[in-house]
Image 1 (cartoon, one colour):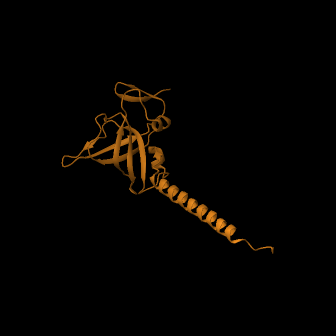
Image 2 (cartoon, rainbow, N blue to C red; image 1 turned 90 degrees about the vertical axis):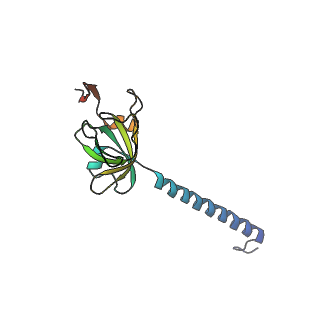
Image 3 (tube, one colour; image 1 turned 45 degrees about the vertical axis):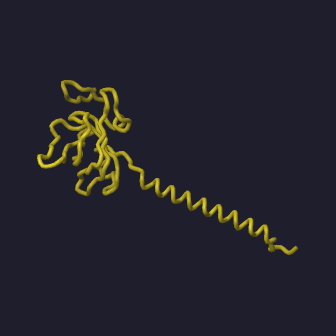
Length: 157
């Protein structure tokens, strides 16, 4: 037997194994690309203002709805409001639709949508917390330790 020659059944088996490996690799690559497009990362108002958040891509933004910032349109279901991380950063949000029943000023929210190049966040979905004890994990990490006194958020010293 000469070096470099292969029996036909072994060659067929090797080609079959290589084909299966190539098909599995390309399938995994397509799945990872699809999952990468569906990832929507969370950004705080401070991160959005510093330019860390991508524009024209679906992301999540969260914070506290600032008191006195909610403006409802008289023509349609458009609502404009500001969210803040209670550290001085605030981002304007525009939402067209029906807000959750628990949405109100001074509440923590997370909104899903796209950040425009002008700095306005166009929300497609708004989520509000469900009771006084719940804080979404993303907001709990971003907001300073605060407590509510007479309807206003105060930073603990």
